Image (cartoon, rainbow, N blue to C red; front, side, top):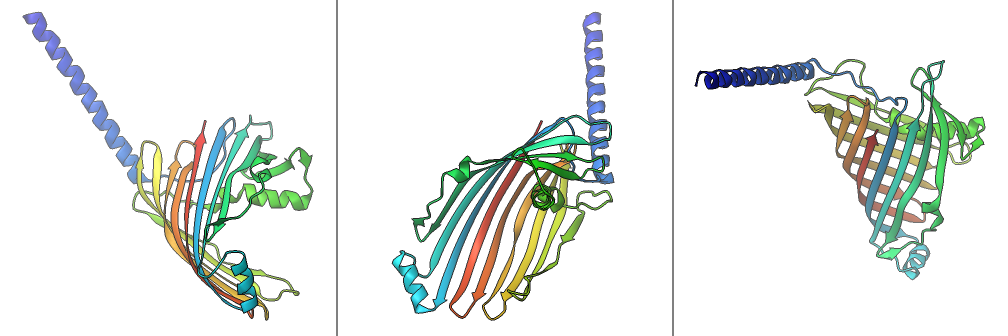
Length: 300
C-alpha cells in the first residue's frame, strides 16, 4: 500500500509539472503575440512554393447608344442587359536553390493557366485549348538584398525590356503587400495606398488616374500564423480625348493568412463589388460586378 501511495504521488507531481509547463508555454505565446511580430514577405533558399489562384467575375451591364452597334450585338445573341461570367484559374511553382558565395540564390518558376471560361447571356466564348497547354518558365535569382532579378524566360536570355516586364509580373505578389517596419500585434492595422497617374500618350490624349488603398488589420496570431482582415477601396478614371471616358470604383472584404516561419502569405481570399460607367459617342455602358478570388500557397 505504501509503494502504491508513493507511485500515486509521483504521478501527481509529473501531472502538475506538465500542467505548469503547458501554462507557462501558453503565457509565453500570448506575451509574444502581445509584443507583436515584424512582418515581411521574402523568398527563402531550398524551398518549393506551390500556388493556386482562382478568380470568378460576374458583370451585369446595360448598353445603350448607336442602333447599328446594338443590332450587331443582337444578331450575335447578345441583348441588353448583358450578363457576363468569367472564370479563370492558374497555378505556379517556384523552386529555390542553395545560397551562393555572394549571398544570392537561384529560383526557377513555372506558370500555367489551368482554366479560362468566358460567357455572355449564356453564350460561351470559344477559348483556344493552347491557352491551358502553355507553360511559362522563368529562371531568376534572389539577390542578397531579397530582390528578384530575372535571368531568362522559356530557356532564352531576355533583353532588358522583356526582362523588366517579366520581373514586374513575377514580383507583383511580393510587392503587393508592404508591411510596416515596426512590429504589429492583434488589433493593429495599417493602410497601403498606391495612387498612380499614367499618361496615355499624345496620340490618345488624356491619362489614367488610379487610387488604390488596402487596409490590413491583424486580428489574431495562433499556431505560427497571423490572420488579417483585408478591406480594399479603389477607383480608376481614364479617357481618350473626344472618344471615351470611363470610371470604375469598388470595395470589398478579404482574409489574409501569413506563415510566420516562412515569411510568406499562404492564403488570400476576397469578395469585391464594382461599378463601371463608360461613355462614348457610339456606346454607353453602365454595369455592376462582383469578383471572388482565392489564392493559396503551399511551402515545403
